[in-house]
Length: 283
Image 1: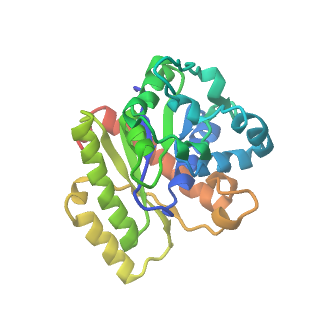
Image 2: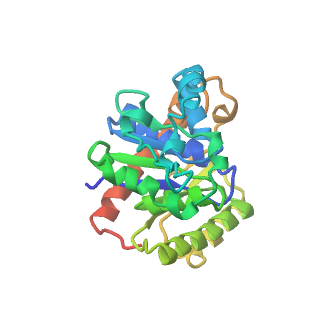
Image 3: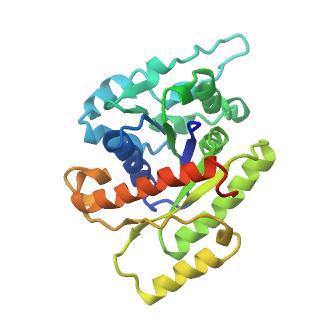
């Protein structure tokens, strides 16, 4: 199997995007022995905070990685003048080992200032992955993307083979998913990236027993073009209070109730990747 680069993305915030991304990454790495790299490209850096909290390394991040820019920001550096040069960053400088099989490139709130020369920055993440042959090192590379249209959203999608859409069963999240498809179409047309594929929609924060109205909204969503031609995961990351307020943070494997959900999602995730890469379904 060719190592896939996968963006987790929705144009609506608060849909559990980061919780799903880090939950899948952590479970694949620590429970299924897959070599996983998380790239946090979202300036809100919530994925970074989640992983740092799990491994009790927040102080290290602030004192070292953030202070010395050992973060995603290094990848997007550009020349500040015509005669200036950019010091090329190496994986050893910014890829941080979190556990035996889990590595991470930390996010950085300071990327909000990196908005100049977007054309020069757009392909930097893709080139970093390719030039350093990261696909040969990892089984999966997962990108936690911003929930807004930005340079970093485009850079994540340009670097990706697939995208997963976390979505809540409500009108606003579905509108966000609809907007996302327009963003994908723009990436395909403007950056000649026709090969990026939808890996699937994964429902988050769903209740065990859906109301009739919620069931109807879900059915209508899945049956409406163009969503009726896309893949929806059977398994869902259902509502678990501890993922929001629990003392062990928002890592799904940390709690018995959410661990069973993320386990099932990861098993379907692996099957889905295998299906798409062997041509089982053409998106």
